[in-house]
Length: 65
Image 1 (cartoon, rainbow, N blue to C red):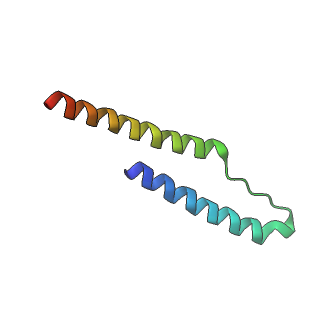
Image 2 (cartoon, rainbow, N blue to C red):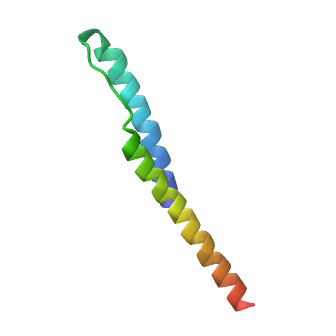
C-alpha cells in the first residue's frame, strides 16, 4: 500500500513540476520529458508488490482453513 501511494504521489508531483517548468522555460528552448524508464520501474514495483501481497494473502487464508 505504501509503495502504491508513494508512486501515485511521485507521478502527480512530477507531472505538475514538469508542466510548470515547461510552461515557464519554453520561451528559452527548454524541453521537459516525464522519463518513461523511471515511471515504468516505479509502476512495476507497484504491480510486483500487489502481486506478492495477493499471493501471501491467498497462502495465508488457504493454508489456515
